[in-house]
Image (cartoon, rainbow, N blue to C red; front, side):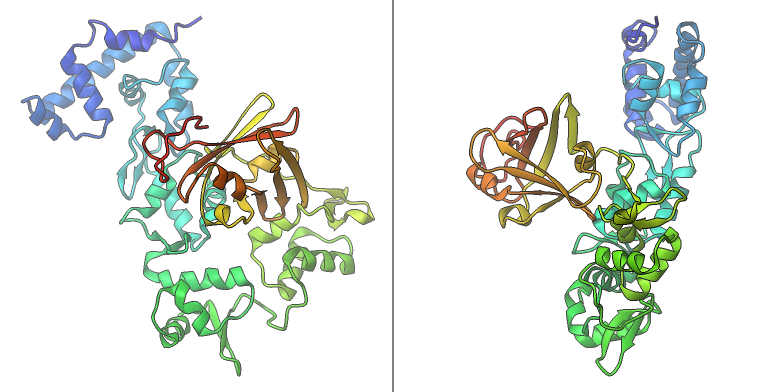
Length: 441
């Protein structure tokens, strides 16, 4: 059995002196050779020589302890980017700064992005992450709540500081006032595109002034005339999307209703043909249509066609989504970290990541599960919608805990007895309400 502390022991041993440890640490933090050289009164070349010498020495020890370490490191490094912790886990060692010279000796380096090297992450293909990120920007515009799904579809690893990378001044994207990702050079028009998708109907120019962040309806009309994604419907003068193939009055209240109507009329149908037919009668995105397939009215036949559950089709379940950092599971307890916003304070249902409903076994829509709270008579309900998960009845809990907008609540769901516990979980000294609380998730 390999000692998982051998690398840390090497770091603290006489094999490395204080100067070498300081140089390795500075380099891991992203410092340049020149700045390290100035600090230690030596040339950048001398700094480079010390780094190379030490990483070779560390690799020599690794060869004695774990002969296949470099093969393992390169296997993990085949991804566009992997955090240092992933390499530590694969090698069975502690995640420590001394691991970085070892990874560099294996031929790995920091992934390159438009904002520079991504420190703390490693790869054998340093240009792959940048290329993948640029492919992601080509999918813009997209809603803020679709960022994770869009990134996963593009092949980006979980845990990547994606929002920071996209918000960098050198990125082609920017975060709009409404929290959506739009192209920097087409912010207003992209915002209008997303608004029209959201409301699902043609809009007057006046309705698009606020999302486009312009001052007049004339500015709206001038901008949209220059973009071939939009068309003006006359004589009303409203604006619609060219991709809406039918602009007759919509007779369905939502996308699920339209999809069910098509399947009811046409019978078993391929997914591609179904989506094509639905978009002819109801303006809806491809992502929304895929969510509609999770409705408890829709299923899949043995030969792969879409049909009604009432006609014998089997309901479809989504694959397990990636767990977000705001949620955790241990035994029969699920934990959710919720930031208090306007929706919470006004009593609206709070949109949540679908991992929560998946883990609760709510695989179709609509489905729900109610938990009684242990310290009062206000239950908490988790619902599965076709568009994702939702938690309701948090307003009274937030008010009882004296939470304000920006505070953090910790929601613990005990599956064994269907109970819930909600606590005020702001970090010490960082509570917007000025309260001192404990019990963060």
